[in-house]
Image 1: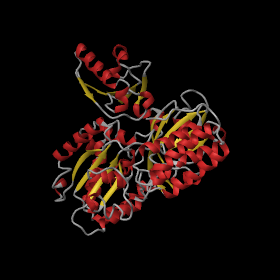
Image 2: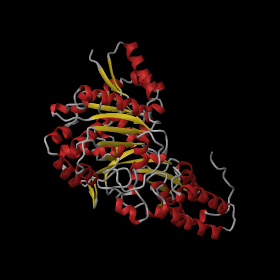
Image 3: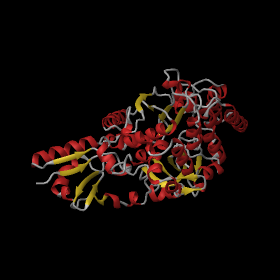
Length: 519
């Protein structure tokens, strides 16, 4: 009897809803039936509403069943699912599931397909082709390819990646660094985690290319401590890359060195800001540095440093492998390539969708998301994390594009989209944004440290019916001060949800029962 290959995700999201129990049940059932099983723990395909998603390799390809619970396993075996036979949970060939088939996966092309810990599997599916090409190019040519691709930082600021790299390349010093900000702390975001758990070698390849491009020999992945599964996956992949000579003192026999290690953060949201992250990497308190000098000139340990996030580095291998023009042909305007977008909150079909820039918010919410989980009308969405603006239903036709979102006073951030139905109280959501800022502020600048705290107090007065119109005006003035006076994006962007809530949902700012403050 042939060995049967079954894929069960080891992604944190799938594990949280029973993937480990499903994997154990399948192994136990195969043992009891004398079936030789090859069980591969892959990353999630991103269709969270179908997790745990079990895939079976059949003569016609991989077929999917989901969402599977451990209690479903005996019935799946009785229906002969190992041969791809029908069952109420049968979804057909995985690649043909409409939700997945309509996506444009470049960064996430291998996630859910490969064994995350296997270099051989990674290479067999196109991995390390970008690095091999980079090793045949001059550093200036690599940087030019990144410039030509139009790649912009995927962490929120959307700064052209090639300009950062060129600045580091141009610094005539012996020691340089490559750092990855994997401190994914925005509400409703999980693309970094999914990639690090489902295709960690993609991130490693992108960082290695960056090191070769600018002459940096040491890289660090700054990972949030709340991601233990990512930590294990990254360390396993780094060890495998060293063993296969894709990292180390002689990368692929090129004579070039690049070393990489993972450092755990201490749980501070402000360390999502690049200079705060560098402070933390140096063993100091995570707080914002005054700029200039820029990290590209004086970064980690005061040396020239590339600072990009996971999605930025993970986009690099495709650009080097397929070419800058190939990548640039996706997207619109100044927003080139694809972006992994994450649907969360009150949504029927939540998960990760990778599409080229230019897809509309409405298409994401209804064609992919299927509307709200409650079946009620969607009243608002927050795009870009807890500091992102609230977008009302009247603006759902806006395109996912940095400039298009900016034109309506919104931002894209890390691509997280949190959905609210018509029962949401937008004044309370505005209050939460400022309270979040007050808790997470590093305290270095007054507008953020004091302004966020005073803002919560003013909203409480408004909701208590105390001189509401006067306090609304005061709140708007306070937001303006925080925007223009804060040292970094935490204080400078925390007013965005407040300002958008006042603009689009002013009627919600009325007297109501007070909330208890957190902490």
